[in-house]
Length: 131
Image (cartoon, rainbow, N blue to C red):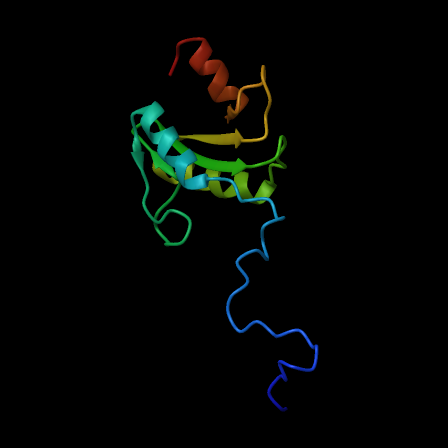
């Protein structure tokens, strides 16, 4: 292949990175900030390396709850059986209540962006003051 000829009217090929290639793509949700915010609000400990190291269950843990967080830039999220099963099994092994926390960064007022999902039986026990 011969080098490009700059004088024959052909465009010059870029040899560097294209900084604008992803300009139109939506940015990913800030899950790190979500986990940090959950830990701060709950006064519990953030689990470092929870998503990529074995033996580090949940994203935030305390003496009563094991929390898993998911964040999305959209106004909706699909909750998968796989996520819930992983959280429930890990929580049962630790003797904690599984809590699934969702951040909808695309939510508009008056809808809150942060939501909590937990087993109905545990929710009712909390409401009744048993736990």
